[in-house]
Length: 173
Image 1 (spheres, rainbow, N blue to C red):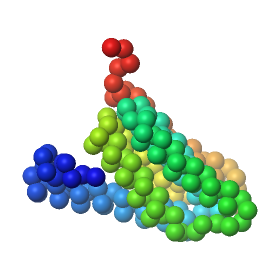
Image 2 (tube, rainbow, N blue to C red):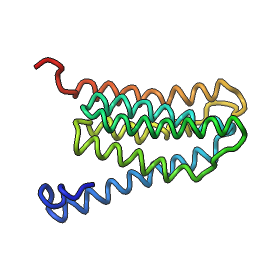
Image 3 (cartoon, rainbow, N blue to C red):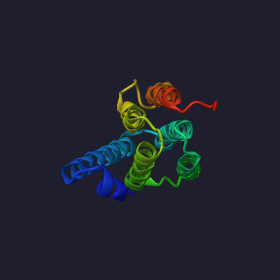
Image 4 (cartoon, rainbow, N blue to C red):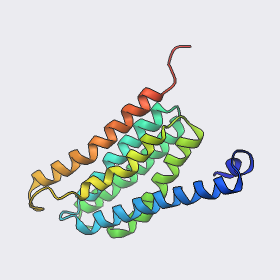
């Protein structure tokens, strides 16, 4: 995916530095999603938090000028919604979704940054957003705690979409 950047845009040192940084960001997201899968009291919470991130990713990528990447983020969101349906039927997917979700979301955000107009700040906020679901918000059995955590995840997602909107190309010619 980044082969043109390695060939024409970066020196070898810059390329490996970018590659290491991007890999660390994806691993960080995978660790956070895995922690969320282990710490959530209700199995419905993890897919809900990830759906919020997917919705923000769709909006940010669309505003960045890449409808194709936004469609792919929609497909990722549909897969997460499918796990939500499975969770309601008591067939929770477990921790296995952490690396898959992280790799796919990371690839979409990397593509949006390098091949569309997605601001780096928006991509970083979308990667960091699930961390806020780890904040203790009262008794885990209370529905209000889930709503507070979901609102905390929503804040950086909304900021990421607003930043993508402000950086988007003008609509008039």
